[in-house]
Image (tube, rainbow, N blue to C red; front, side):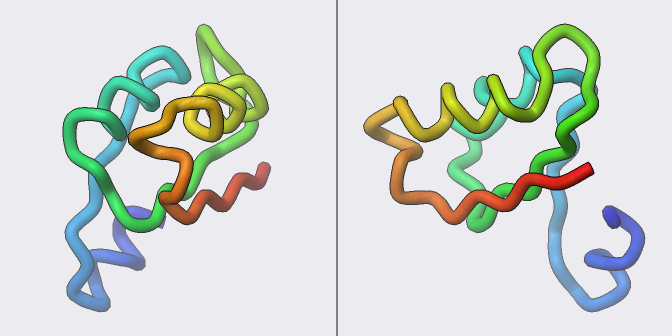
Length: 66
């Protein structure tokens, strides 16, 4: 996905695990967030939950999938 988005001129950020994902989102404020469901440490469901509960990120479009 990173390669494909880059090919179309998008800048991507990549978290290596579920714990890093919400931290990276808070720091960088991406638009949108694409989230894998199968990640180490925290799964995508928990990452999505944390993002939705965070007042600073709750309005960021979020797509999750496997």
